[in-house]
Length: 125
Image (cartoon, rainbow, N blue to C red):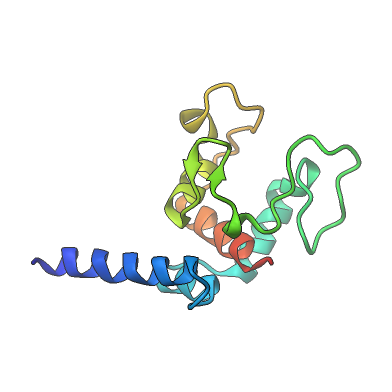
């Protein structure tokens, strides 16, 4: 088994344990990168709370999209992708590639910022 395969199996094991509640999901995010503190700043910069209810931010005047608190416990992102950190990052960066009819705008979020936003969202209970 190559070192890349060993790493993938190890990460999959940690994710599986997290899903069972044996490992804090924040630890999984930290394992793969992303800063919840930077993520909160990026959420404010991109105005994600304009459409979504997000813990730590004022509620939107009109709720256009679903709340994202507790997203780590959901089965799917956008009703199509299994909830994984990688899929959340992809959804944040390329929503129309995931679900062409979505109202979520493509904001040009960088890979690093998407990891940070995912880290913040995964930290919410």
